[in-house]
Amino acid sequence: MDLREAGWLLFGLLFASGMARGRMEEATAEAFRRSSERGTVRVASARSGAVGELFARSSVVSMQGTGVSIKALPLEVGSPNGPGAVVRLFCISLANSDLAGIPLRHVDARIPDVRVDPGALMRDARLKVRSAGRGVIRASISEAALAGLVATRMPGLKDVVVTVTPTAVEVTGRMVLFGATSRTTAVLRPFVTGTGDLSFEVIAATMNGIPAAAALVRGVEAAMNPALSPSRDLRLGLTLALRGVQLLPGELVLEAETAPIGTREGSR
Image 1 (cartoon, helix red, strand yellow):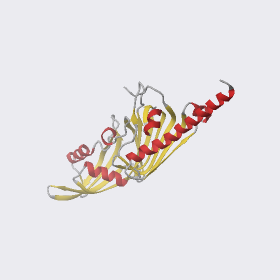
Image 2 (cartoon, rainbow, N blue to C red):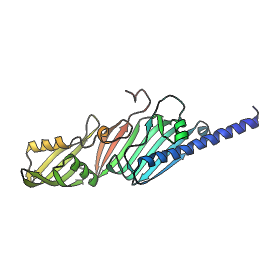
Image 3 (cartoon, rainbow, N blue to C red):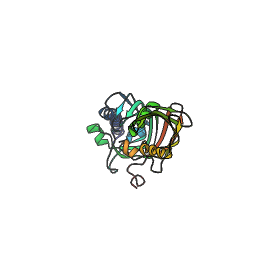
Image 4 (spheres, helix red, strand yellow):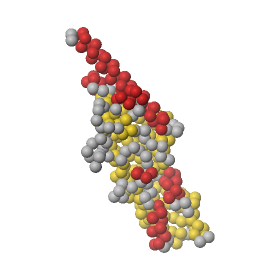
């Protein structure tokens, strides 16, 4: 092969990998549009230089959405074997969206070292993941969304209002017991269980201003918990566990971790 032929070959490879990167953007955007009932989605990828282009390696792929309603993340987990187009960091950022019916003020996900099946990408615009590293997700839930969760877990509590402060979550509402309506207030402290679920401890509760009986407090905790279980409530296509919870004025912030995909650690 002479220098001229080598130059044309290099140009062809760079052009092909550029097409693959563009196809990755299109496929990612299309996959999220297919799984979303509303909202807008934008996808962009950053180059990783000529060498990275040559080996179909993109530096960062970023997906941003606003007002999106997603039933499940459109990620397919395929065989770890075979060729893969590598994304050093896959970023997902959603604002004022809901995931699996849970309204979220904001979601930020960072998943490193994602290998996707280039054949599925180019042929069918499908995002089939061969392997991925351990990811981190941070999501914030508003007071209104928390009120919806409480009302779902405790249908006997009506007109639920939730107030979040940096120290506690306060829930107020009306409860009907034995034909009488009582104004109920509960002060809750969130915590993450050993199984990676979100639960609440009732640290104080009153009914019409009178401290509630211990049996009622235990009943509230049993009915409410776990308030949010990733394995039960979210369909992400990823193994996910909560790792931390933080209270801020007007919102509750959850931190979670995704297990690796297509590795020994992820298959345990």
